[in-house]
Amino acid sequence: MRMERKDTPEDLIALCKRGKSRAQRELFKMYSPLFLNICMHYFDNRTDAEDAMVRGFYNIFRKVGTYRGEGPFEAWMRRVVVNTAIDLYRKNHRNGFFTDLSGLEEESGPVIMPATNLENKDLLKLIHQMPAGYRMVFLLHTIEGFSHAEIAGKLGMTESTSRTQLLKGRKWLQQALGAHETKESNIYG
Image (cartoon, rainbow, N blue to C red; front, side, top):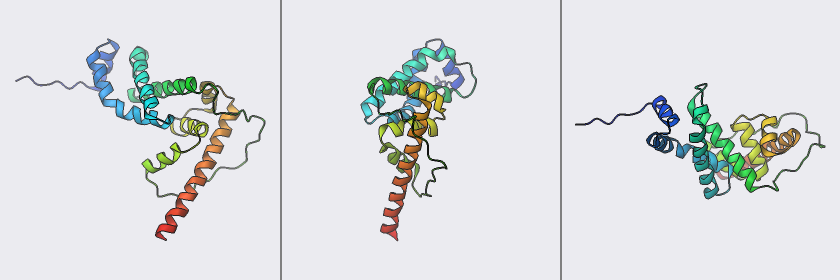
């Protein structure tokens, strides 16, 4: 009886670096649900999200030789997929959703988010309802950890516009969470 051998993540990385399609298929099977979910946050429809995910995997397999083992491989792949999604988003939205607001002063003080009992999936649904420009900057900065300089470079805007889009996104979310909590308290209160 022949035992099926289970490759470790390190084995799969090494095999992908050698261009082995079996390892590529295995990585795709393991990570496509996660990366599709990530891409769904950046696009308004599943088709564009799937396109970004597939292109992301293409870029992972094309660039896997540049992975030096510094940090988790999953984090490296995620960064490649997110960058691919940004590139595709920017290509499809050449006119953009962003207005250069660099002449406006940002309001001082933090945006205070109300306490919420929302589950993560419900919070993500709410974030997905944000205007596209706010959502893109909010996700890149808050979820992915990009700096305003990185966001500005990737999306073709000024750092000030990135900061302003983030501030407006946070305010939008604050209002949406407040409205949700008011609705919930009226139902159960």
